[in-house]
Length: 146
Image 1 (cartoon, rainbow, N blue to C red):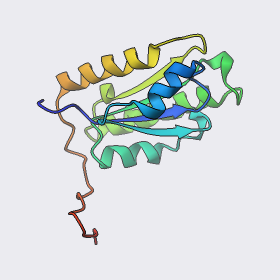
Image 2: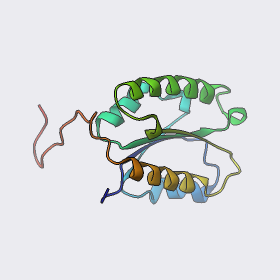
Image 3: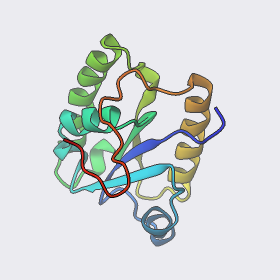
């Protein structure tokens, strides 16, 4: 794979406590990573993940707080259960399970998000492109999709 795989990153707004890590995510993400912040991973509708897949994401990473540190008590546990079941569905229709990664980050972790994204990107490079479920056409310059 010559170009870097596209990654859709869904991030709980509370899971990165380190200002340095948060600044990196907010301002210095590589161009192949597309960030969506959420109030809690429990608020991620599986259809958002499907939308990322249909838009051409080679992988989806969801980062949230550790279970005992969730601001919404059980939001992250609910999200993990729901998204793992949805990942079974995606796998059934041809989007390999390895392309969706759920990461719990401790509030004390420093630099962990960068390590997790780098490891995930390497795994996606080995898997190759995930084009079989891309259903949206790219918009040509100055035009609209019908």
